[in-house]
Image (cartoon, rainbow, N blue to C red; front, side):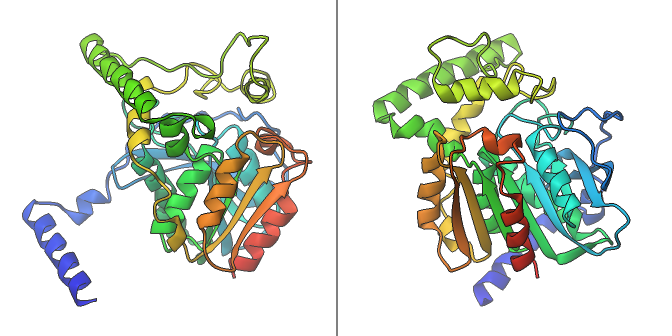
Length: 350
């Protein structure tokens, strides 16, 4: 503890010498242009109140979120922050999860990660294992200062690629008391190793060569190449999981104009940081409760199973949903185990 106190004191001294101003740091939000009409891919519930808010992360990026509050109920409420899937926006799966949780008595927010959707950050469509983990903690920052939130009862939900970032956030942020991951991807693992860990060191090297060549081209052109969203038109010989993605992101069921997966995807060079920074390094040190949910038939099931093996403690659970594929857990309310999610949060957000 003595060494920690000295470290913190030295950091504070350095920050003071550099001219940082606490008051200035709290005035970091930029004004965002937010859509006023209901433009979600799911119907609006008459059981909850809805509004939009903004908040900023430690990097000064202003994030946009939808807030769902139980109608005609009084707080303070247990609160949940939701994000994902990777390449989606809050008008898709995360908003559906948040609205459903609000119907069940939680104050829930669905937010667009940095550089995506209605959130701020330039250039657009950049992924970062650090900043995207921070986005969850920024949502917790905002929840922690709301008068109608019980600040001792805050949890998070990460869907698909944001499931991995949610675990990383739970490992660093002790204010998070319970974490749910749904149909989780470890984006750093799949980017570095490929599906089912098929890439060897030579394949990674060749990928690095191609990505760094693209960096040069991006700089020369003054624009960032996009990697492309879900493939369209869909090839006849596409793997089943690609067909499942197409059925969600490219069809009225889940299409949204601000979603990278529905349109032209992430910046190609976003893969560089994901390749080099494994996000689950300290997941075995998570002391708070974790519920990991995955579909039995999902191509991505191994991400949750392997991540779960690393978790410690009797407050961790892996739930496999019979017959479900990866995308079923995006929006199929007859498949997503909301009763179990509600029970989990009620148990651990005491």
